[in-house]
Length: 221
Image 1 (cartoon, one colour):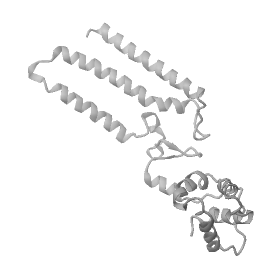
Image 2: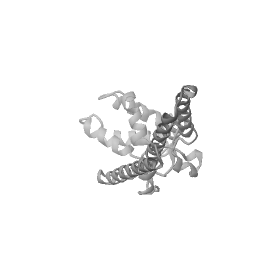
Image 3: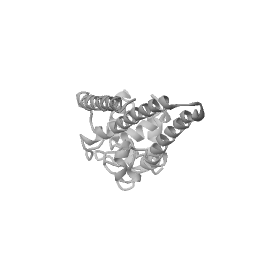
């Protein structure tokens, strides 16, 4: 390849990258894309998500151009250049993902904050240990009254076990209960829904007791 051909290849790759980035950036808003946290930028967040793919396309174009030059000069004396080059390329990509797993553009925020699962406060979860710590952190639902003095948590637990095993087993819904409702402060939503679907087997007083138990006792007893 001559310099003119290299320039055309780079221009084609750059144009394709810009076209793809513009397409996906616009598509994210047309499909009703919403940020996972209010503290994130509505423009920088989608762009940072596409940055990895854009970088990969540019790098692939450079690799193709390099292999093209190598193919024109290859000889029987250095035939190992192709497998060695492939190994080097894979090693560089692996190292970039290993040291900066959340993306190059996020490296300035500190390695502890790098991640792809964002919370409502703008922080992120990257490891299994962080996820377990987040699930174990107690969260109180603001629409559920606090337990009155002398509230019997053990009796409330027994009531919850009896009522919440009628239509399904507790174990089958525990993950959803903790991650979707408990951690988002919506215990009242799931309990009132359960009361409405139980056909009179759960009274309003039962619901109130179960709400208090799930709100304050689930993480303790």
